[in-house]
Image (cartoon, rainbow over all chains, first blue to last red; front, top):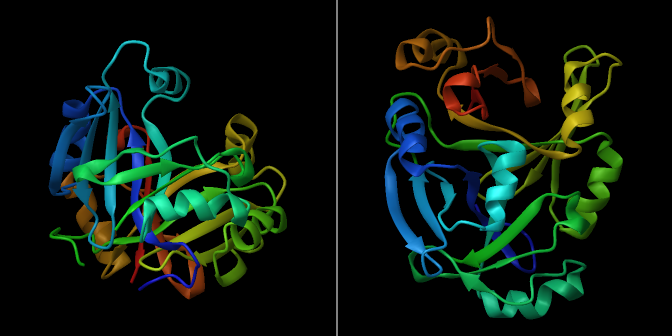
Length: 137
Length: 137
């Protein structure tokens, strides 16, 4: 169940960007029947992150909370939608050092993820515009 | 590692729609470093489905092959991108019977999935426009 890869260890979560967590939970918790594992506001009130159980991985709902947050522009363009894939790594700081040498440049610094874990966005240009993230396992 | 759900058993794969499998493999196999598990043309030449190993689940590359395939329109609008989530189920035919009663209407019939498995698309309207699929485990 683990990946044969120098850095990535598996899919931590697949993220949906949503304009409103409560409305999204009426779909993903109440209609689809997924169990809520956690829901928290992180990054000084910037976003609400809610994790739902898919058994072998998580579905993450991402709701931007602050006016002017760049994710609002994405929502205006796309509506609710699949936003990024997040891979598990052993150590986010080590991934920050190693990934550029593997042809995967990253954001300038890690950020706060879920449940106190660190996370790091990768540049989307080298991956066909698909946004990748890594987080601690 | 299994879901507490009457029908869904976990995430079988997350799918990327791509215009060209070989170009996509230069990214996902050669740059990101994912292992290719299978690649096959299904549905009478309609699409190429390629699975890559994420350890606890798969990444599926979907390339429409036939001119006029409806997925070409999606690619024209979005470019390469995250297209759907596919949940494992014990029995696709049973899911076809059960899911509408769970508030999740489906396509009119199952279709051919990967590696000889059956699969079934759900209607996207009840899930915030996010396309779900189910397939045999």
